[in-house]
Length: 184
Image (cartoon, rainbow, N blue to C red):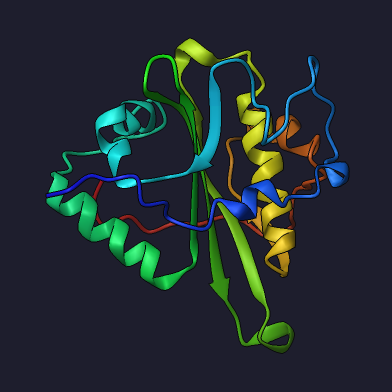
């Protein structure tokens, strides 16, 4: 089982984002190409399994027990579909993932067979909160969805986080989010 550096998606997509279209302010200034000293914003790769990806994800929700084989199988599926843009922030000094966010593309028949983007699993490790990494990831995922020609982008969040997402021009919808869970 090889956990290599193969990116989930073309890293050039993050480098090509038009940061002038970003709607939030960063102080001090950071961007996808300069996320902070010792930090690197990039696509997920298989080697991130051993860089603490699940430690970060478990700060958001139950991550579960994932074997390297299952991780690779899921990674390969995501890469083949071309609809998953999982982005991580790596602390290059520690060799650890400290933040992550996911953009998923959903293909529709409505709106002339348009594509909808969905942001999920935005999480910053406890040790790195306050470094604007959540803002950076949401800004990058929002701009990436625009670059990928999504007609809209949506996300779900707790009521206490609405104000955070409003900074990025997200607004509450009249729709109600509902779910039917089959397991935790």
